[in-house]
Length: 341
Image (tube, rainbow, N blue to C red; front, side, top):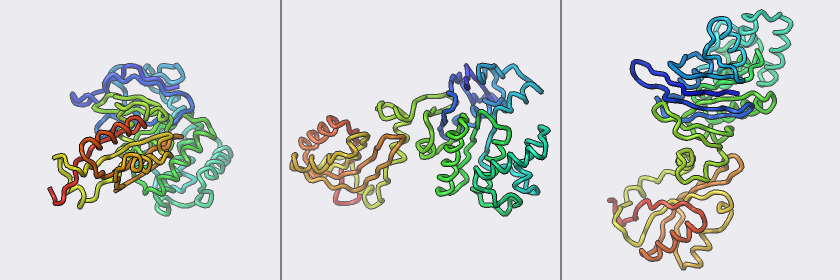
């Protein structure tokens, strides 16, 4: 569907993209994650040649659009639509006219435009806002209008540039659910960029992790937890991991004592096994659960526990071995002291 081959792009001697090779399958929701400046937006805009690469090829349905210019490129872009963080609606136009604009530019009849807009307003649940102006809409409603506008010409690809980062959590959930519905209903291939792992884990089938203009990892979400070295796995666990309260973090030192503080990561079947209670009972070990979180990524349950043990070095080693045998990842955060360190 989308194939990027050897893409390179620089701005003022700064490499924004470095040897990008990527294949996005038809009908999948593909996520690209990375910090600001990683090259995410440049990569997304290279797919429809809003940013033309210095070298490399962009293939859509096996057609190399990198060689196209003018009218031929505009026609190729009809297969692709884009939604942005800031909505980009015309403030002087109604919801109807904002959605109608791309179709009018392409010469659709007003009858066809009206029929299409009625269909799209129903899809994005804004039929009652047909004659409203953008100033009368919430942020989530504006993004729904932008999504409807993007779908007017029945694209095969939808490019999402931080489409939820300006929205509150509840509205973000609704927009992501809408994108998932669009993917399932129309089979549209969706490529989205974000710096939030929570967005990736909610709807994406596969993801790429970017750093310094490079793709450093390419993996299916369902396979993330199979690799201990996966950066995506670390990002997911970081999003899951609770923050230690200040009163506790101030009392954590690195000099070993009998009060080690551990963080345990678990996934799959271990999430439903009473591991802590069994270990406490069988090892005669006092385990104090301080923080916990659990979630589901795709179909896999996973979570994190922060526990304080009352154990000497030998018992600690025995407990860690038991964790590893149960496929839990263990991290020693330090040792709890009686006073701030």
